[in-house]
Image (tube, rainbow, N blue to C red; front, side, top):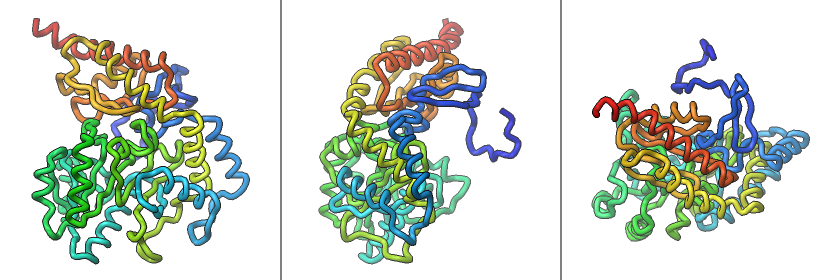
Length: 394
């Protein structure tokens, strides 16, 4: 499609999508694709789930938008549900419109708390991704993404993921928070080990440091639990959500434990937690709970990686990493984008997570046949992309 007036912030794939339902999308030529890109993790319950559509329509007929100068029933209900489900003690919730905004709020809250306690610095992980706003970009441990905009805020220090000794060494007296993704999404789909996460929690407790968990991509059932931290039995002081929360509507949330909070005038969002987005989010939570989709995500996580690796040529996949419905397949060569394009030809959508990692983030509603279809398409695409090089080297 010709888009002369759209700023090219994304390198588009050669598709114009016009319709979606369940686990499938259709292009403007009428061809169907299995959507294992999942709108970058948004479509946890699939596209246009009937319960979600009904909830959104009913809310539109009742109360659309009134701003946060007034309380609304959907926002109050959603805050209560999230406080019950997420591993944040006695949480208070701030609503916004995206994952970057949720992380921006978390960083701002950690900075406020740190300045008050003489601990203004924040530690993040190398390879992390927390967003593209100014502060979230500064917190992102991928220098190429930051380079065009530096100097950025200088609040952040970085350590390698999984290295408790390095973390312990960098937690000097001026560090007030650790920010991490329990499953590093854009950094190649790298789950942090349970023992590491428990060690981080222990170090934070020992040093009086906040543990801030970015669950924008990994939360809300994506990895088989309401929050990926729960796999390690760890609680956070601050936790962020977005993507799957709205079921397709823009909403983000930051939860903070009791005693750590903004006050009027500290922070705000005009559209954050609007009635329609909150109604959609409540339908997402209800559907995950009612249809046992946490368990379904775990079952998909048991089937998908093995099937995909088995379908690919021997030696072409170095490692399959992930949990539940979030998987990264590290290839022997940096051809992830080529493989994603070849998967489109096979009728399945996926995304890169770095030059050598193909990521699949399917709906939690995906069936066994769809998992097998995605695995076959991945294997065929890898074979197509790698075959010319193999033939040329023969």
